[in-house]
Length: 156
Image 1 (cartoon, one colour):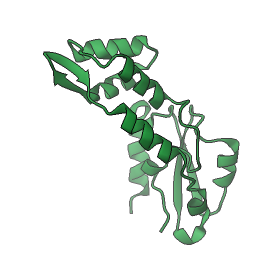
Image 2 (cartoon, one colour):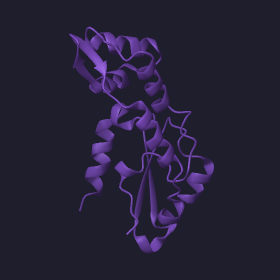
Image 3 (cartoon, rainbow, N blue to C red):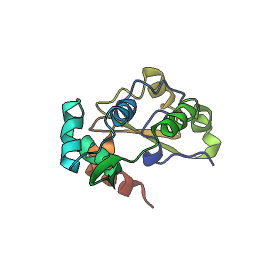
């Protein structure tokens, strides 16, 4: 059965060029400035100074681990890039558009460019429902309450 819940479809189901998004900016920052950081707050401040929103910087700081009397970014950025490249190559539109798979829920952030005009045209299939939620690509950071409300409304 090929269904997507709102949580699974925060990006368009088609293949994509992933290197132009915030994830790569965060990975680049982690590579440039792995630490040690004296305090988590110092890391957050540096990430904000690098152009990221405070809420996103605070969320990303969860990837810091104690090291040498401070904190270091605890991520294998090369492995993450490889996983993202594999993920970006996948085209799930055939599964989404197969009505035999059941209803499909898609979520688009109102201030995100993740869904193209072509993606939105695909979402017009009768068994596909697209919800637009106020926020940027990082809906879990920008508008978690709206996502919870959307999820709860879809529960049986």
